[in-house]
Image (cartoon, rainbow, N blue to C red; front, side, top):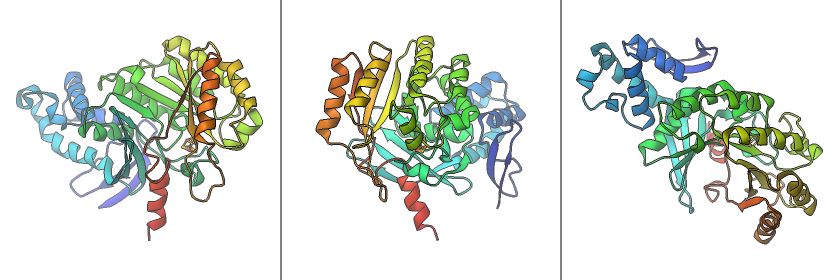
Length: 362
Ligand code: SF4
């Protein structure tokens, strides 16, 4: 078995494990998967059927009731090997049920890297878009170790297929490890695939970002326009630069304007994410600025009390303070919710399962 990394025809990273009887790289991008199907004689309809089956968590050949007559013989012969390669894209290392009904999954990739996905209550999945993350948010475990590599679009969709194989799924949020804006081509390719062949409603595909001009330029031009979640965390530019050290330096007030422009295009509210840290961004001054920025806008503010991470100095505000902040916004015309980070009773927040696995590695 030979492990290799490289760049596919679309200029994207792939990683693969090759064996003597498999000359192709694992299809870590959807484009590569489509090309492999075409190479095997699939027409556009066959390709769509196979992709849909995959995204339903079913075998590729299950796209038709009668594959023997529905698919070309050469394609049928190629499907088992292709299926085996897709199954290797993400594999469950361990699973960790939370008290809130979520299940945090530690997933292994074909090249030995690992990522996390979270099966959310009520038919959702939170997927990773990168191995690690370069933004370096000071309150996040994933950000501490930087970026290891990009995920290919097929590795992103494979997390959805894996979740779908375990039960009904209607919502996909791109809020796991990584900053989607830093892997934009792959994430948009995954979204396009899920929103077309996969049949997911665009409002149930949630693109989460710290805010990047490329996102605001490209999302409105997409054939599938996902809902937007913007990680704001503070209204103060200097504090934001401290909390999110490698996020693009865009004033939070401008970020809100850019996000609201997109909300007008999609006619769907922007979800603003705000990790609440005691004494850092839970003050009345932040509330006043938020009312100024968001009152009467097409917006939902999600306050998420910080999830303790071993070795980090922060604390979360009391439940009462967090609830009072949400109530204050509500009273002043801003729809606000107090949320928990899914599965936070299991190894805390995003990245902690992976960090533990890396620490345990020989
Ligand atoms: S919070 Fe998100 S953007 Fe920030 S470092 Fe963690 S994964 Fe990256």
